[in-house]
Length: 365
Length: 205
Picture (cartoon, chains in turn yellow, green):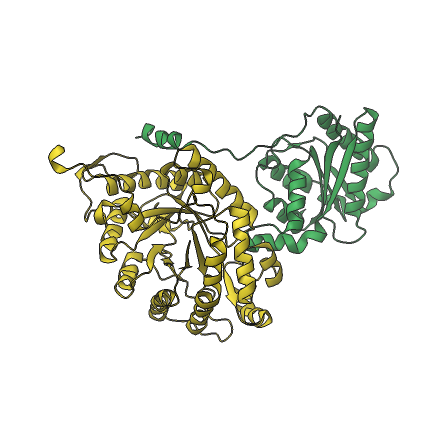
């Protein structure tokens, strides 16, 4: 099982002292956080993609390429890459390039994006969100698997004899996750291709995500990729920890109360009861995270949201120390217990390369 | 035969409120009319006042609290609805509208609804026709022709053509629609198979 962190990349004022990081400070902080993730033994760092303030990560492969050069083991991913507004040709090339630079430590999570105004900035129409996600991904899938592509679609100019370059490392396309907050169509898409499905699992009660993941698992089996239990599931999560749970609650409360997404609404206590957010001791985080398996089945990837709502870099790095030293080692051990042998790990470049069908020798073609 | 499920949504703010009083009279009148035809009715009353904070939180977080969710499910599963609001500033109260803003926009499709309102003056009675009826039309509910408005002075009038008469007429209209209703069925999540989604795109090229 893989553990890691995902970041939205928001620039938010720290509500406890009124300071706001500059874009430069925030971008450098995101990199520092990614490096820390590897230092403390996490497996994955994923960055969001946004094109409007107060968010900074508009160019994920630039950032991930820089992080790749300064890490050895960390898998670099996204949360999410906008399959609707990015040209699939550019996604194919950017992530293949990143694969080569990072020696294969790359996967990617596709998402539609839910910020309406972004669509026209890239020449698209939000009313076509789902059809764009479907058609663009179908093209991306082909570009990574066929050296020469002839293609005609509804949303972009046709391609004739086109080769996206560089080709994926070792002829193995990056593994793809499809992230969704609400759309069953995207669960269906992930199942159709045998790709992974990532449920954000942050904003809403677990019942909502149980329905989506249940649908994905069932359809994954329907399309013949394996049993429902073998489908590749990733989950988000959100935690804030201190040794004593009262300290965690006291320190996190002002960030919660003013958070852009859920602030000025329910109390911290109600929200932690109703959603996967955990604020407390490392043991409480372990206990809550272990319940995810009961609700969603054995899964492959757990990402935590750690740097948001104006939390200072120093605090986030402390949180990562606790996560890496006290929480994840226990989770690795506990999740491994009673895990059926047929449930696979999350695919990596190495595992995909090992399972790649034998190439037909050039002479035989 | 299973009893019919009647849900009464009432947005009065004081306790007791004239809005709740009107709600109860409408609920009783519908129950009585159906009882005469041998149909049992389970009446479930939702006092929006008790859910005011949960409704506001739903706007902020995007999901309902467990208490609010239970009531939203009751509304969705109902065979019919009685919706009663005080008239504030020439329209339904903000709390009343906020509740229906968090109800799923397909939850009331085809559902019989009786609309009613209370107000301090009879001059606001057409708010029912100009505000509530279009809102429920948007939600594709079947709103009965008689909407019941009770102004302060109506509570004292005793003539059969007054408030009591309107309550009886509206309740009769709702009861008639309920009596002819099959058991409530629930649509499940339907997914269009992926090949079909792809094919639909290709067909449009």
